Length: 378
Ligand SMILES: *Cc1c(COP(=O)(O)O)cnc(C)c1O
Image (cartoon, rainbow, N blue to C red; front, side, top):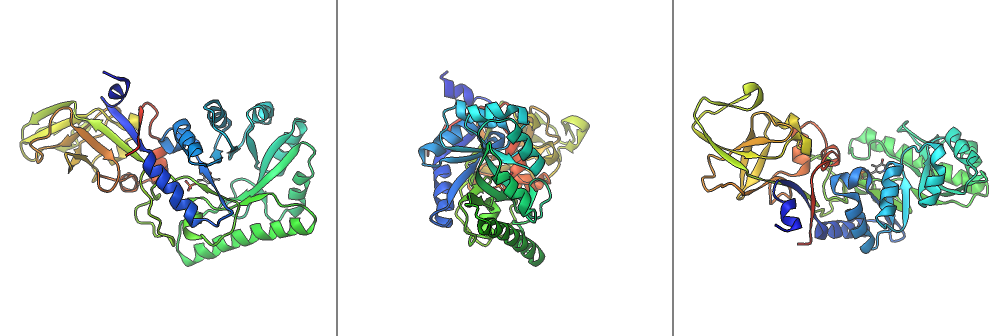
């Protein structure tokens, strides 16, 4: 067996680079001409494989990336990724030498932290995070003097300033007005800085939903994560812009065993499922250890085998799950099962995540701890 065949003998993640390219083009078209796409590739590029995805993005001309933690940034550099890499989260100030060595841009998460970074005495590129209402990280937008202090710090080179919207995914009137307050306070801070003689660095506000619902904002970057991977967070989300996004990731597995069970037999842990007829059951070697949520057990989850959607039955185990293939008589050991894919293939990430009580972002980012990633270009 060749290398790639081994990769697809059990359960694997397939990433479609043609879809990735298409999404980059769709997002770029929706952005103002001077605005750049910053690809958010934290958490293994939402389970898609950070190094692989980022190097394809590099080849497509994407030169700005965001990671959550310094390890991810270092890993990108060690995989040869070129361009800017912004660390969105906190990095211990004692690691400034590494930030510098790997040419990473650190987010300033508040004023004391900026002072601490500056005390390290090494020339460090930073983006200042501004808190406009999320109240998670950032210097408050009202604290003009605090922000000015960061610009004046001897060892920090401020090359960007950004904020994060906390309800950009909502089309409710009060959420829209909250979002408008957030953007207004960000721009008024920028104005105040400019009036005081500071040359403004690159500004950014929007993540995926920020672009999809507030495309009129004019910024230097859009930090796109979930939309880049071709899905929305939730299946029922309405957005102002309706881009043609194509899911990049599919989760696939193979039937390793088929069993015949009599009517009345229970299947799996806790005997939570009882066959209501004589049934053919297929065992797939995929479970919550692979990122397929256990909370889908007993819900409406299904997988696609030979283009038929067949229900997941009983409890999902760490490494295995069972599906009822009674209605697909030709299903055989070795058949591919699509657990998550495009609409045409089977259940999508937003549907699956919704059924599990979560969002695509969590579902995808938890995937792939032990799964091989197979790249396709079709
Ligand atoms: C994760 C993250 C993003 C990307 O969000 P998506 O909704 O996936 O596009 C953007 N900005 C910040 C600060 C983030 O933490």
